[in-house]
Figure 1 (tube, rainbow, N blue to C red):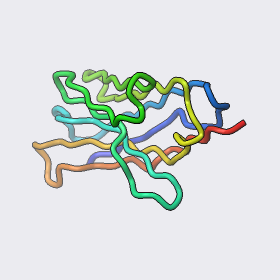
Figure 2 (figure 1 turned 60 degrees about the vertical axis):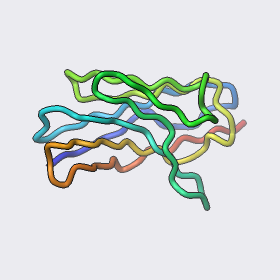
Figure 3 (figure 1 turned 180 degrees about the vertical axis):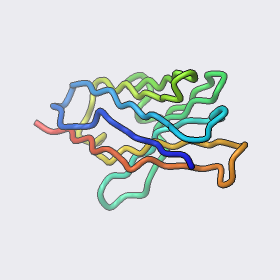
Length: 118
């Protein structure tokens, strides 16, 4: 019904930058909320950042000032610009979409690996 496809992960040195992208496709009129979650080995999945359709954003404290979430509603795409990356940012990053007009309303991408290491 709805597919989310992430891209942009990879290996980067501490202090480096990466930009993640996620494109949603399918029977979509509009997406209420798009977000990025991450899951590190042995840890629970956590919400990193979210953005509503009008553009209201949320960031987990650990990424404030370093990560920026944005979206292109016309392209059903969400981005995560990650700067000043740290080893503790290493995780699989998952794209998420909440679409209130669909049943079910919640959708996840397959995940993209981000590794921060020297």
